[in-house]
Length: 216
Image (tube, rainbow, N blue to C red; front, top):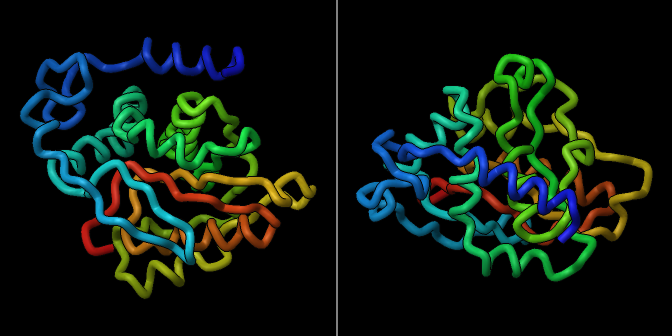
């Protein structure tokens, strides 16, 4: 593991919260015992032939933790949520030393509003655990989009079509890439990102998410 990834890992440990990520009760391990016992496994899934690895199903109490992380300024919950991804999953997608972790990006207007990119933080945390590199510049959102959570399935697909671009300097050609997002619902956003990266020549080996909605 490089000096950078060791430093990033230490920083995430330092910033780890002392309250339960879901119910806010004292919990130095991120989730209290009651909430941790309620976490449900995610069903296997694929997007355009790319396997999706999710830490858990998007259901209570994990949904509350993710909302606090995304919408309530709790960027410190990143280490807790990233820690839910099993080490065996990281090992499965990190077989190549050149593997690059790429987050689903926010548009710059949403980034300015929120103050941080939740998927970029997760990508950095997961890459540091796997001893691999992360890049928030390999993929970007070229136009603002409506919040997917407010749209039905058909509208979600239209909302993100053509919304992303990737690096055209050849750096992604043939490189194994892991796409990182916080939640996968219909898969419209992640699927569009996978297609954009693949068009740039990347070899997308997996999509890593903290949660996936039951039934997709």
